[in-house]
Amino acid sequence: MTWIAVILLAALALVVAILALRLPKKGWTLFAAVLLFGLAGYALQSRPDLASAPKQSRVADAAQSGEAIVSARRALFDSGQPPPGFLTVSDGFARRGRYEEAAQLLRNGLAENPGFGEGWLALANALVEHADGRVTPAARYAYDRAEDTLPGNPGPAYFLGIALLRSGQLGEARDVWAELLENTPEGAPWRDDLAARVEGLGQMLEQSARQPGR
Image 1 (cartoon, rainbow, N blue to C red):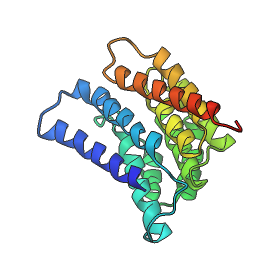
Image 2: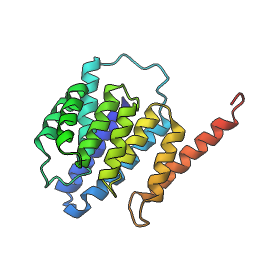
Image 3: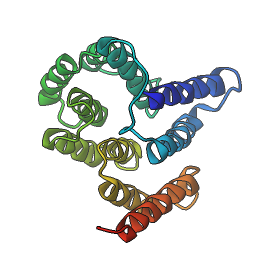
Image 4: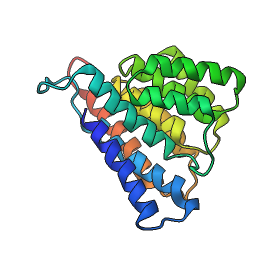
């Protein structure tokens, strides 16, 4: 799971920027978004169909993945605003790779707080991980709710695009990111990188369509 290590490095870079370089608080979300969009490079170049070397136990891998995903998601939100208790507890389960329990806690919390956008995004990510990277109808619904309740936040579309790439749905991933690009302000620092990702996916799809037998 090379992409997990990349996410962890991005999260570490954000911490360094905040603590060591004293990045202004108002710039945290933008800087995090720049880092997150850069992670798409692995998804575009990886070959998940190739056999890999022997790996650690499934539980250890799930826990590593959970820690990275929670950290990357939290980087998109104001750390000065403490999250509600149900999200904190759910993140604890997700960090240990226990996505089913995490998702159930989020469902219960969102039943009473349906307008809590980060909760919907956390639920969508938990459902994807519980389904081994597949974007289930329930996960897609949660991403849509996150998008509705987080206007202007790139997180829902970004994570949905990554999930679609992981499941091999390149065309849908491109469409999601292309829509995000269309709605991204000209001055957004992640715009150029996002445009490059969309163009790269388009070229991959064109090449695939030209292959014999397609």
